[in-house]
Length: 372
Image (cartoon, rainbow, N blue to C red; front, side, top):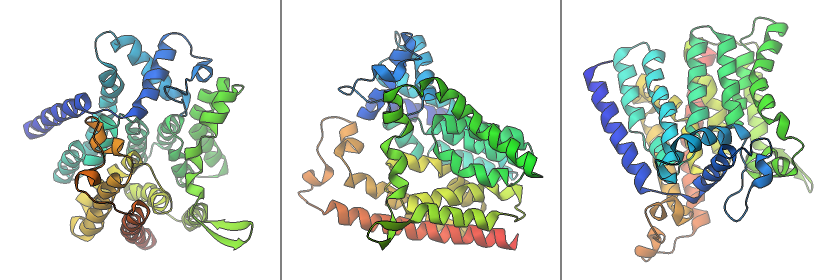
């Protein structure tokens, strides 16, 4: 790695430390609580000690095990705000360095590295909100790298570890197992992909709190809201409809492993188009958008600008804790501007722009795969 990139790393680290130490979001309290419970030995009955007055543990257990380790190691030396956020740094940097291995052209790889180190989505989600989405994101980009090296078992296992942290990488499992040579090979890949998640939750299944708050968490059903009614009690669920259609398109198609990041991108673009998503979730697709940007800058620059601009604007039509409230007891920016925008209409406009740009990218990626 060049001296210039090490300077980028140093600047990026300073920026991350500043953001981590000067911002706070209440959602990070759940990771603090989960880490404390695990560090104190309450591992197998973790969810039964969830305190709704402080935070609800509504994620798979692996993330609380992760925070339990760092709570045990760092709680006596760092503030909770830091010992919750700083452990994410390893995965953040691992993603950046994976670009250098994944993209063959050194100039483009270095550009992707720089874009990642300063991309606002990662800085916001990881070091301001204190969310752990960087971890499954890292495992998905490693999975892409392993696919390009034709190491499918390791690729699907990496995807499986990502699923154990957060369920969304399961969207990529079917496209990946399509690469298997025969039905037995595909079955083996599928089992490798789901095993880490199943093993991690097995001991918690008897817990009512786990089933109610984590296994069937409300966030998991957000992708089912967008629907076209066909009768008074029946609808076509748009995201599952689009996802199944995409899988049917892929079935039997020869896909270039070097462009498999496009295949991972499409389920997420469809998801974000058709779901009222949490701001930190955009990090899931950010590495793939960066790859697209460095490989085809002129062709995708405008839709990329629209996607990131609409994401940024959407932050100001949520609770103030997602923007100014991270820095202190501030009100909404609209209060200081003496404006009273219609939040629902504003979010709808922003989402419409986001969906249009996403659909354009899906079209480009499908066109590429068809010609390929």
